[in-house]
Amino acid sequence: MHINRELKRLRWFLIAPALILFTCFTALPGVRALIYSFQKWDGFNEPEWVGTQNFQALLADDLFIPALKNNAILMVAGGAITLCLALLFASTIHRGMRGAGIFRVAFFFPNILAAVAIAILWQQMYSTTDFGIINAVWIQLQEALPGVFLDKDQSPAPFPFTDSNYLIWSIVPMLVWTATGFYMVLFLAAMQSIPEEFYEAATIDGASPRQQFWHITFPLIREVFIVGIVFFIISTAKFFDAVWVMEAELPNKNSHVMATVLYQKVFHEYNVGYAAAVAVVLFILVFIATLITLNFSRKDSLEY
Amino acid sequence: MKYLTYILLSLWLLAVTIPLAWVGVNSLRSSKEIVENPFGVPWLVQGSPHQEEAGHPTPQESAQSNFQNAWVESNFSQYFLNSLIVTSVSLVMILLFGAMAAYALAKIPSLGNRLIYLYFISGMMIPAQLTLVPLFFQYSYLSETLSAWTAPLGIEIQLHNSHAGLILIYIAFSLPFTILILTGFFKSLPNALRESAIIDGASEFTVFWRIMLPLARPGIISAAIFNFLGLWNEYLFALIFVNTPEKKTLPLGLSNVSIQAQYNTDFGLLFAGLVIVIIPTLITYLVLQRQLTKGITAGALKG
Image 1 (cartoon, one colour):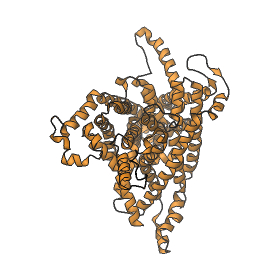
Image 2 (cartoon, chains in turn orange, blue):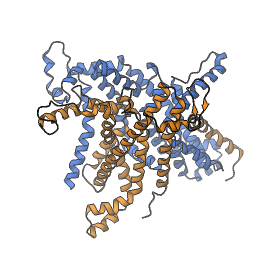
Image 3 (cartoon, helix red, strand yellow):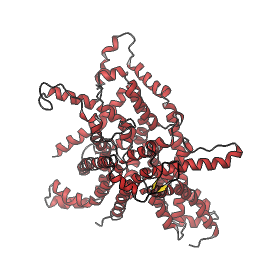
Image 4 (tube, one colour):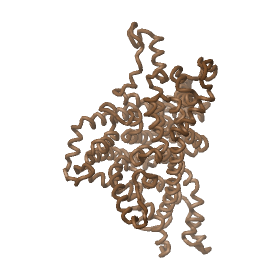
C-alpha cells in the first residue's frame, strides 16, 4: 500500500500519545532504576557512583536474604499446592461433570477481589481475638481431640499462623485460595482445545481415565502448565499487598518480602540506590520468567 | 475416584464461599456480637442472646450503623468516589490511546511498526516495583518544572498526592497489555473495509473513528474489563503517590480502617468496608463472568 502524507501524519497522531506516556512514565523510570542501582543516593544530595557495591551489599543483607527466602516459600509451597489442585480440578471438570459451571464461576471469583480485601479477610479469619473462624475451628479441634495436638493438661493454644514469625506460611493458604481458580480456568481452556477423538480412541483401546490423563491430557497441555508455573513465579516475586496490610505497614525481619524491603529502603532509610538494586533483582527474576513464557506461548499452538 | 473428586470440589466450593458469606453476615452484626460468636449464622437466624438487653441494637440497627460508619464517618463514600474517578478517567484514556496506537500499528503499514510494537510489549515485563522509586523523584522534578512554567498563570501543578499523577501512571502502565490485545484485534479486521471507504471519499481518520473503532468493540470491551479490575484493586502505586485521606482510593481506605480496627476494635465497620469494596467487583463479575474468564486467560497466555 502506498503511504501518502495524510496517512503518515495520521499514523504519528495516533501513536504519539501512547508512545509519550509509556516512555515517560514506564520505560524511562525503568531505565532510571537501573542507573540508580549503581549509585549511592539519599534522594536529596548529589548521587555518587559506586559500581556494583549495592548488589554486593544485598548478598550479605540481613533483611534482603530472608525476604528472598520468603518470596521463595510463597513460590514453591504456594505454587506446588495451587498448580496441583488446579490441575486436578481442571481435569475433573474437563472430563464432564454436573455443576461444572458453578465450580468454575465460584473458584475463579477470589481472583478479581482486591488483594488488600483478601488479606484483610484472611487476617480476620486467623484473628486470635476470639472471632477468627480459622482460629475458632482450631481451638474447637484441640478441645475435641485432647492429646492429639496438645498434651492432655494443656489448654488450647491460638493458631500459630497469626504470629508474625509464621506470617509467610499463613499467606500460603490465602494464596492457594485465591489463585487456584485462575490456574484451573487457564488449564481448562487448554484442555478444551484437545480434540475429543483422542479420548474416544483411547477409550476404545481400554485406557483408564488416569492413563488418559497422563498420556493425552497432560502432555498436550504441558506448555500451558509451564506457563502457569512461570506466572506463579512472577506474581509471587512481585508480592507486596498482603504482607504490607497484614503487618500493618511494619513488616519485620521474618515477614519481609522483596517488595516490602524496597519500600523500607526508600521511604524509611532513604537509601535510594540500594532500593533500586532490590528492584533490579526483582525485575531480572520477572524478566527471565517472562522470556520463558513468551517462548512457550509462541509454541503453544500444538499441531494435532 | 469420581466421588472423591466430587467431594474435593465441593469442599473447595465451601472453602471459597464460606469466607465471603462470613464477611457478608458479619457486616450486619455489631462488633460485640462478632467477637462473642464468630460463626454468626445461628445468631442471625435466632437472634442473639443480647436481644433482650436494653439498648442492644437489632440486626437492622447493627447493619445500618456499620454501613453508616463506614460510608460517612470512615470516608468510604469519598474513597469510593476517588476510586471511581481515578479508574474511569484512566480507563477512558487507556482505551482511547491504546486503540489509536494499536490501529496505527495494525493497519497503517510502516517499517517502524514492528519495532514500536515490541517496545510497547516489552513494557509488560517491567514490574511496578522497578519504576516506583524513579517515578517518585521524577514527579517531584516534573511538578517543580511545570509549576515554574505555569506560575505566571497562577496555576500550581502537583503530581504527588494528586489523582492526575496517579492516573498518568495507571495509563502508562496499562498501555502495553491494551495495545497487545487491540493490535491483534485490528489485525483481524479486513483491509477491504478501509479501501472501499476511501473510494467512497472517507478520510483516513474517518475510517479509523467511524468504521474500524466500532468494529473493534469486542476487543475494547475485554481490555476494559481487564483494566477495570486491575485499576479498581490497585494498591502499591496508590500507597506511594496518594497521601491525604480526601485523595485516597478504596484499597487504601480499607487498609487504613483495618489498621485502626486493631486498636478501636470496630470490626463491624471493617466488615462493612470489605463489603463496600467487594460489591462492585462482584457485580462486574456476575454480569461479565464469561467474557472475563475468557479474556483473562487469553491475556495470560499471551502475556
